[in-house]
Length: 451
Ligand code: GUN
Ligand code: FE
Image (cartoon, rainbow, N blue to C red; front, side, top):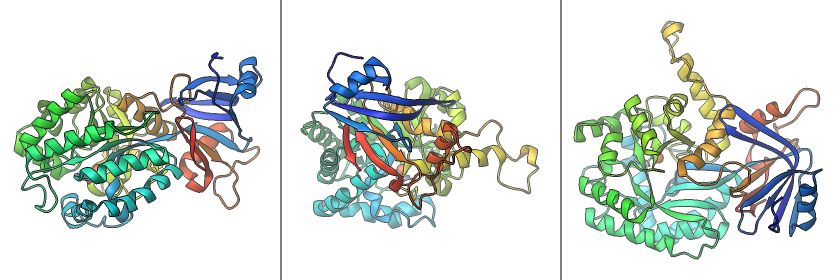
């Protein structure tokens, strides 16, 4: 046990996924956490170190045998301003959806009081779903963006908050865009400075440079944002090869794939989060892996907009970091556990194929399936690796971002049956069945932020 005095000790049973093929089960352990939220140690309850942690911690949380402690979920791609349309509008293709539904809604965030009314409702709701870290697209508005960062701090959610940059006269409507590349660059730079100036002793909130996607951005804006990333060291996020339309647009405009184009603009960097990536080829995946960037896999949204299934397993095999994203509101569910279940489901569809009129032996793509362990790994350690952040596992040196799931709550489908279920089955049930009502506590940086 570390000789640092723990501010918090959590005692109970732990489930986590250090690799896509490993379920780590640790029963009756004590997690001791320093005042800054860092995990000091994980020790057996019945060890000297474990006993000492429980005796000396400022606060002790005892979980019972029907509770499980798991790492918090990392949503690597979420559009905060689309919260009010979550659950609607998925009957049309991506481009039309943007212009008819999404840009008009996002334009409303010019009004800071509207923005605040959404953020203050959304952030605690996401925490209740177990999202301890969110990588947000905000809007083009600096003030709404800053208010989102402040709201995350108020509620204790870890977040990367990006002012959306978009200036292309054809790819955006005149009433929702940066006036020109220069205005967009200055606004993005100011937004980074504003977010970095917030009082944030635990380091929860960071800015992230956010060109919406190539179709919405002029070459001048993309060039400037690449230079801004180099100058400020801020991470980058954008959409990449999401749909046939988007992938085709970049091929036609720049004569290369989306990935290669982003690389030329200096936007393919360590920690760059590329949302969706359904149409990435192997060369693209190798480029992304080599750059230390990665993909936010958004399986539910992709089922509506992508025209393809993201090959998560293939991407990992080619060295790409992969996290899970809700893509609210393209993905019509706020929780990452349902997104994990969906990642498993779509991987089976990719492997087996979907059209019975095609012979079974050539209907699908071999070796594509992932299971709940792999999907949960993507939603925790995978996201942490993508962001290059010490999160995603409950082990010394990482931040104590965690959720407590209760089994056997009255009227919940999440039940553990004596003589039938073991820890592996309980884990599988948690991923597929746990709802916010089954998540009794959420910790970020050692603080209980939802219960
Ligand atoms: N591509 C550009 N903007 C968006 C967006 O808001 N959602 C999705 N899914 N794709 C996009
Ligand atoms: Fe998106």
